[in-house]
Image (tube, rainbow, N blue to C red; front, side, top):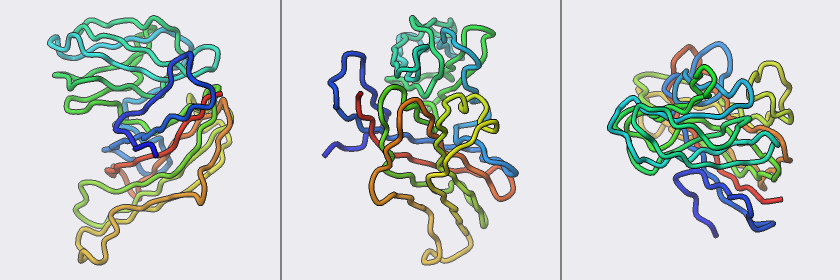
Length: 250
C-alpha cells in the first residue's frame, strides 16, 4: 500500500491510464479568522489567479538562486498541470505555461528568504513559502480531468493558552470558478469538524486532534474544487490541517 508523502504528488502528461497517485495536503494557518469561514492557508496573503496568465517565482533574498520550485494547478484547457521553475534570487522568473488556477507549490530545499508565487500581470501575489518551510500552506484540490478520492481530514489547534474552538468544513464545489469567489457559489459540505482545546484542563480532558474519515473514500468528479474552510470562535486562531486522498488518471 502506498505511503502518505510529505509533499503533494502529481502525474506528468503521458501518465499511465488508471494509475493512482497518493496526495497529502498539509497546512498551518496562523490566522483563522472569526465571523465567517475562509479557506485554510498560511496567512491572509493567499489569492487565486483572477484570470488566465503566466506566473512568476521570486524571493525576498538575493541568495536564493538555483532552488527548484514545483507548481501544480490547472491549465487553460481545464486539465491538471505541473511545472518546475528555477529561482534566481530577487529576480522574478516566468513560467513557460499559461495557468488558469494554482493549487500549490513547493521547493526542493529551504530558502533564505520568502519565496513568492505571483501572477505576472500586476504582479499579484498568489501564494508564498516563508523561510523555514518547503511548501505553501493551502488546503485545496483541483480534480481537473481526473477523479479525486477523498479519504479524510484531520485538524488540531496550535499555540493555545486557554480554551479555544475552531470549526472546519470540508467543501466540494462542482463549479471550479468558486476558487476565485467562493461566496458566490453553492457547495456540498462533505464533512465538519469542531476542534476544542482547553489548555487549562487535565490531559485526560484534552482532545488535541479531531479526525474525519468517511466509511469509504468519496469519489469526486472532474472539473471541480475541493477545499477546507475554517472559522474561529472569536478571531485569529492557529490550526494545523491535513487532507488525505488520491488521484486516478482518466
